[in-house]
Length: 413
Ligand SMILES: Cc1cc2nc3c(=O)[nH]c(=O)nc-3n(C[C@H](O)[C@H](O)[C@H](O)COP(=O)(O)OP(=O)(O)OC[C@H]3O[C@@H](n4cnc5c(N)ncnc54)[C@H](O)[C@@H]3O)c2cc1C
Image 1 (cartoon, helix red, strand yellow):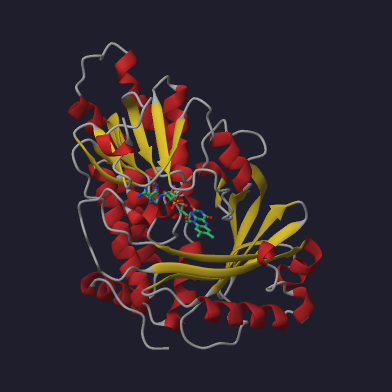
Image 2 (spheres, rainbow, N blue to C red):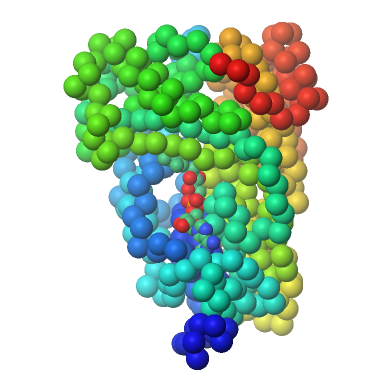
């Protein structure tokens, strides 16, 4: 039987087919395979090595991560007009080690591109059909299986970073892990950007000029220019800024306001496709790692006394476990928070973050979702009200205007 006949030889019906082999797809595939489910994972380049620098707060990472996955960790600082010690340890992941840890020989890996899913099977671009009881869309911001087409211009996080040795980095950071340093030491006017400076392990440090979110994303050449200016202002020579060494440069561009997934029958969305991305921070990896276990618990009911649960129920339970109604409400509130951020006049941004980082840690964590409050509407609302209460009347005015006016575009530079 050839691919055009509908089935690839040897592909028996899977319990779960995961479209997309990024962190979300592999977290889910790994967790489900460990629970004894038959899992197929499809990706156009399944052997691609992950290279992005992923960071997360230590307390949001699941227990039991394989040794070596956390490459470095330290207590973070945030600097706006004042310096704030953040109490919380921030971790940088060894991304290839994470990829190795999530790999599971029990998962059947297929090279291909999923283009559709319906009635218990996924269809690849070459016409192959793979039967599966449940299909997970983990194709990232592409949302390959979403029925919704939303052409609105996305707000994007963009950044440009270089990797330098610790001693060189310390001349810029005073040896601190800087979650955000908003001081405009690049000397450029306009859209505010900050320095993200984190240890990578092995005596290396990433120094990254970052635009948290902008619609459209701040262009990478502008970020490169700002990074160079900032590093030169700290005394680094041109030869100490390795922009011409691709192995020591990181380019970041991804959307932070991907629309809610329009999931067809039998499909559950994961990771950035869901979207599980926090609109204000852009983070999703730690959440995807946590959600994977819940998904596996929901799907593994087959082997429990709920063996007669039918497919529609199983999918409903999987959706509830990964991004239920409450999580959708919290996400909507955070998207409003993003709109507010995008509408703040550039000069007000450092003041806003000064107030934000002086919040009690419990509220800060709830706002960032790092305490697992992604599906706790009351806790998320309390955190947002607490931010509001911290602000001066001028900032409150901007907040109200931003919340009422909806998505803002970037002003002309
Ligand atoms: C440089 C960089 C740094 C970042 N740093 C952080 C960070 O510190 N913390 C954080 O939480 N997030 C970070 N992010 C955001 C990060 O990209 C996402 O959080 C994360 O990659 C999302 O994982 P995912 O598995 O959902 O999607 P992706 O990583 O986008 O993976 C999607 C996968 O689906 C595959 N695919 C696409 N279309 C199809 C199809 N039709 N069929 C089958 N497969 C398909 C792709 O090939 C890819 O392998 C960073 C992003 C970049 C670019």
